[in-house]
Structure formats: structure tokens, C-alpha cells
Image 1 (tube, rainbow over the protein chains, first blue to last red):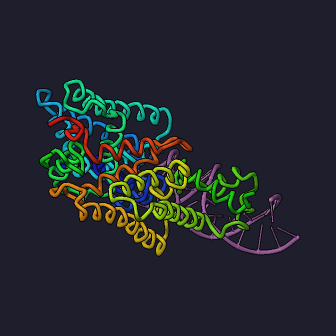
Image 2: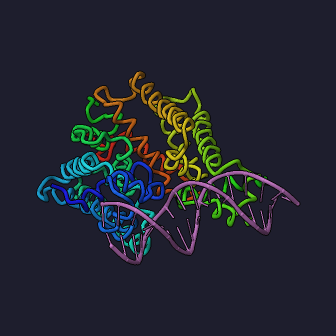
Image 3: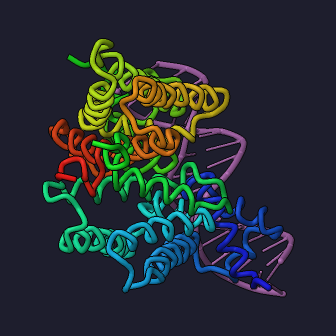
Length: 192
Length: 192
DNA sequence: CCTACCGATCGGTAGG
DNA sequence: CCTACCGATCGGTAGG
């Protein structure tokens, strides 16, 4: 049973994702909650505070998903599972993922800078996954690791625009992984 | 020598990209143009009309870039050049590319629907590039073409967030292409 | 959770 | 391109 506060954060998440932070008014949120505008201020200090709450929850979800990837899996397998984990979070919480990826820039300082740092930490974890695979010799030696990270993060960060809410994404994550691993030409799967 | 109208579209492009469409006021645009707010209405009918102009120009730029890819190049080579072309447009016009990719959803109907259709056409051209390559046997036969298109479009559409304005992007485009082609594992470049 | 209200700002217009 | 203004809406508050 969700509290009214949780309902408000959820509704704000949905409307911020649909209409944008600045395109959503407190009156819009009130209407969606079925109350008068002034009544919302017993559930939040401000509209901005809702954005802070949503972006923090988003960051926590993505980090938690990566945390669940087993340390003892192979380096390539860990990348595959991380991709599944990330897309899984997006599918489970499209609105929160959208606000996390697109609306965070409307955070006031100092939260905005703090968010950027947090986001960089998340991307660092992806770099680390690639770096480990490279160190263990699982990647080709002439690989541009920076380009590879950028490519996988592009796939991850663009996902909120096309993922169907609640859809199963593991298979698609595996297909992405397969292409990243062996490419679209795929000499690996053909006799030389 | 740019006209005042062109200056306004350029300024609007920059501010819409930085602050978002709803986060930018006519007063902001006036200040950046060095005039009073009311004076802008001799250069545009409305704020919305500026958004229409920017998104249309963006669409035209991306299509023109694809048009410049030679028909007689090989199917794989055409994909490489298309990637260069797309990233080149983003680098040359980051603001317009940002509005094109992120702010178009604030278009009023019927322009919003028209834009979506236009965008789908652009994505279809990418699908076509991949399809041709597949038909000519340049891609592995077990490839999920849908996933491959989604991956390359993710790289293209996320680019506005990290590309340095005016930077040279051909080399990076080629690195992306190389990873898409042969993967990060790269058995293709190793002896079997 | 409501009513009633605040000053500020919104996009846009009239008349020059 | 300016001044002066319009009604509507903004986020937020007071008092109950």
C-alpha cells in the first residue's frame, strides 16, 4: 500500500517524463492526484524537491542493478549481465529512467553537480567492466576502449526512448551483447 | 551575413538546447538578441514557430548528410560513411541536433505527428542501409537486423550529449563502425 | 486536504 | 525596434 507521498513521487515521475519538468505544473500534479494544488505542499516542500527525489531513486536503482551482477562471473559474462540489468531497470521504471536520463539537468545547484558526479561514477563502473575484460585478454588488443564504452552507454542511455514499459528485455540485451561482442559481420561465426 | 531572423533561430536553437523549450522564455531570447521582448514578434509569429523552424532544419540537415553518401560505394562502406555523416552533422550543429533529438516532443499538433513520421523515415533509411548489406551477404546470416539498427541509432541519437561542438568526428565514427562490424572480441583480427 | 490569496512571470498584442 | 499593457498561469503560502 503506497503512501500519498509515494504516489506523488510516482505521478511526478510519470508527468515529468511525459511533459518535461518545466512543462509540468503543480496544478497538473494536483489534478493527477485528485486534490487541490495547495494540498500537495503537505507531501513535498517544492516541485524541485520532487525532481531531486526521483533522480536519486533512479541513480539508486541503476547502481543496485549493477551490484547484483556476480563478481565471480567471467569478464564477458559480467558485461552481458550488466546490460541485462540496465535495460531491466529501464523497462521496470521507464518514467524514472527517463527523468534520470533526460530531466536531471533541471536540478538546481548544488544537486545538479552532485548528480553529474554520481552519473560519472555509474559510467565509471561500465568502463571498469570493459577494462577488466581487456586486462584478462578477453578483448582484441587493438580495441579503442573509450569508443566501446561510449557505444554501450549509448545503447543503455537511449533505451528509455523505445523500451515498452514492463516488457521483457533480457533477450534484446543479449542480442545487443552479441553484436557488441562479435559484430554484424561476424567472421567469428563463419568458417574462415 | 546572417539576417536577424536567422540570428533569432540560431539563438533559440542554443537556448532551447541548454534550458529546454519550456525552460526558455521569450524574455530570455530577447535578452540574448539584445532587444525588448515585444520586438521579437517582428521576427517570428510565436515561440512555437521557432521550434518548428529548428526541428525542420535539423531534419533537413540529417537527410542531406545521408544523401551525400555515394550510391555506388559498397554496402558496408556506405554504413561507415553514413555514420560519419550523422556524427558530422551533430558536431557541426550541436544545438540544432539537440533540439531535433530531445525537444521535438514539445511541438504542437499536427507538427508533432508530422515530425514523428519524418523521423521514422530517417530511421527507415538506416534500416535500408543494413538491409542492403544483409542482402548482399555482407552481414552474418544469424544477425538480428532490428537489434543492429537499434544499436547504431542509439549511438547516433545519443551523440548530442557528448560530442564537442565543432570537433572532428570522422575518426570516432570509424571506431564505432569498426566495433559494430567486428565486435570488441574481434576474432576477425586474430588467427583462429 | 481546502479556500483564498500572493507577487512574479508567462506568451503575446497594440500603437507608435 | 520600443513602451506599455493584456489575461492567464506560474510556484508557493496562510489559515483553517
